[in-house]
Image (cartoon, rainbow, N blue to C red):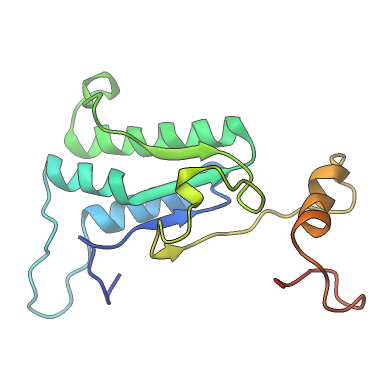
Length: 156
């Protein structure tokens, strides 16, 4: 954000879960920290909220978690503006989708070059996870391990 500035950066959380990182990024883009004497280029009104909504994206495999992230970001928008959730402009979109960040090539939020920064706290999938197909899909479809000694694969 310091290289491009808050007005020109786009970020995505590819494993957004319930949206903690997306909400923090929303607030940071909307009201960026000022370093030195440089004025804030974004502002503090509805335009700042709209810009923050445009540049913060999230994707999660779980549709419920993605919906919760979208709700939380929209609720933060309403709170910042001091209005009820029903008074937030319907034209403002929240860029959150339910998709597989590793394997979905059709989701526009995951297109190459769509974002400048990828910030995530990856999910913790243990061997006891009942959805073994979800756990092994990235390894079998797109990734190959560089060594059998290490449990996590690396890109080709």
